[in-house]
Length: 278
Image 1: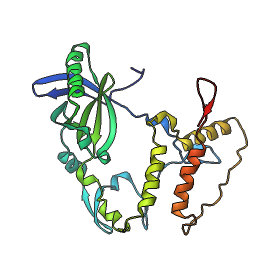
Image 2: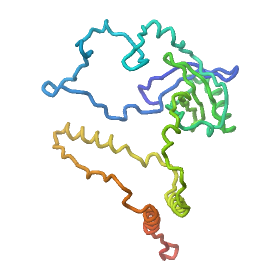
Image 3: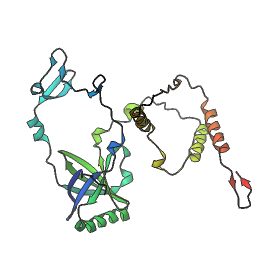
Image 4: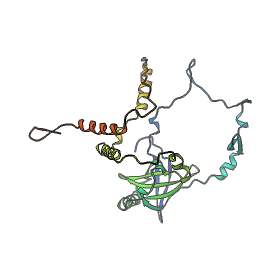
């Protein structure tokens, strides 16, 4: 396990009467992104945040309360004791309540992944039993866990030699697609265009290799920061404005040219006799 890694949560994984100690670690590198601070240029120091109310001016922390907007500019004030009373108690158990096929979970529900590991050697056997049983049945476990006064629905599934836990969104957190797709034209495209698009998709189908994709923006930001640290002059690159407006290229022609271009780009492979074949 990487050094200086702190567990996000410690508790027990429970399946009926089987309970074993586990630790949960974030599976996402949150330090991967470049974060900006506001800096006072003359002094080079960070800019602080003052609390300000329009028409009143700067206010003291003791005069600030938490409120929920229930109508435009209308708020219900709630004090911390009332908020604390509504919070669920943090549990120390992740209960596996149900098992389903992973394909049953709409990908929009997945929130964030975590590595779920046995807390000690004594827990390793039971951990391996649950992992291998999930792998053999092709199922994932659905459970509930309360962390930091918030209850989560989670899925638990095998990943390589271990288990991964995915926090899931609740149904009421997802917006309704029909609210956004109502204006999509109902008429069907020409069959020939669909067939060409299917052919193009087939040509571009390949195994998913996440390492092939790079966060270009973050890489450029890191390079920019490093160059400025070394005192290099930064030359801005101005992109040409994107063209907006009508569909300049005929869709059918664009599909045909895309397929033709793909075919022309196919590399020539040498045969065993040294001859070239398309």
